[in-house]
Length: 356
Image 1 (tube, one colour):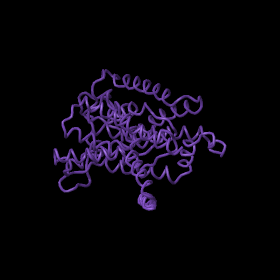
Image 2 (image 1 turned 180 degrees about the vertical axis):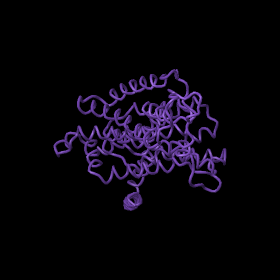
Image 3 (image 1 turned 60 degrees about the horizontal axis):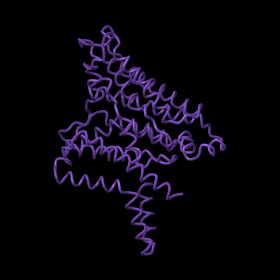
Image 4 (image 1 turned 135 degrees about the vertical axis):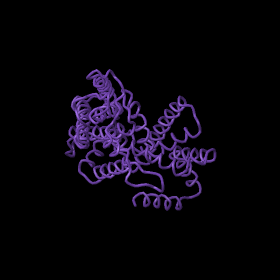
């Protein structure tokens, strides 16, 4: 409703302008929404080249891939609201994915990492990966808030630390870094099974888990004192501190929540991928950051909403799927991803300068 109301107000404001101001308004609109316009044009072009792009199978695939990436994007969005970022996110996803896979391998699997350990209860494993993510998040938040270190440096350090832990973990019990596969059937059904189908196409369960994450994060951001404090700290740390907000506690909690979201992503990815290695989660943080910025979460701090993050994740996933439909070289796709991030950040900074 707020989205519709905002656009209605903008339309009424536009109608009240004179011809010169309308031209200026149109120019600003095109610049501020250039990325969305380009993405829409790319979607139209891809459809003209391959109509299957907007077929039911493709749409379900886009929704599924987006849902799998929603938790990490929702988590990293909070760190961006605080004018920071989190470079460790992808490696935390990799660590929690490998932990999930190792603890939920089928008892009869010949290359089981822990041969004498039966598959643990799924809720217990889920709790374990949440705790792992929360610990990494706590370290990030504590170092940033207590030692006043830059988030880039702190999360770069924890990225390396977590990666080192991951590399050591997958060599335990003589595993020697081999892929962790042979997952227990109950785990795969829990994550990738389907309770609801669209026609003959099954919708994976993790789509609904992604939706639950979005609802929880929306509630936290919009209906709790913690959410208000997060935006206050992101807007102006000193002013928030003067007004009674515990800046240190808020910063730590934001990163703890982000770490837990990475744990959720790792838990889902382990079953979705089915074969997990040290490269699981690689560069996931770059896609999440790009989605957040496209969705309006500003690096200048104090700006963003969960709805925008969801839109950003979907738009980014649509363009990546479109690149595959157009048979664009995989190496070139990395260049396009980088350009999208640069364009989104440039537009975001321009909006900020205009507001000032």
